[in-house]
Every structure is written in C-alpha cells, then in structure tokens.
Length: 92
Image (tube, rainbow, N blue to C red):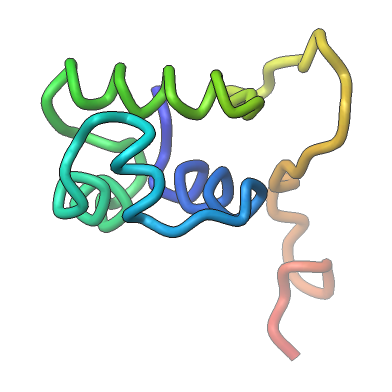
C-alpha cells in the first residue's frame, strides 16, 4: 500500500515532476494526478500502482509502511503520531 502523501513525498525527494514520474512508470500524467489526489491510500488499477511503485524503487525510493522498520537504513522522512495539544502538530 502507498498513500498519496508518500507518493508526493517520493517525487519531492527525487526532485521530479508528475510528468517525469509518469514517463518512468509508463503511465499517463492523469494517472499520477489521480493517485496523488486520492484521500489516504492510493486507489487505482493494480498494474498502474505496481508500475509506479517499481519505478520509485528503481529510482532508490523505499516506501516504508506504518510502523515498519527500514532495514536498509538511509535518510528519509516519516510522520510522527499526533502528540495532542501543545505538541509539534498543534496549530499556534
């Protein structure tokens, strides 16, 4: 599973636009746009999702699932769980 946020973050880490990712994965730009507009987990044609994930993998991006350990180590980003009022996620 991949979330729309992970997909956008992966593109940002690679410094590529939607068109470049679409070319890398062999899918259309509207397909990437729909995936990124998904609410939460990306939904779509399994073959298209697989192509995008494989393209990101070839480019060096590791998609880390919720609570999973990244065995390869390396740099990356992960959202922390919400801490409640007064925490890093609180507006103010």
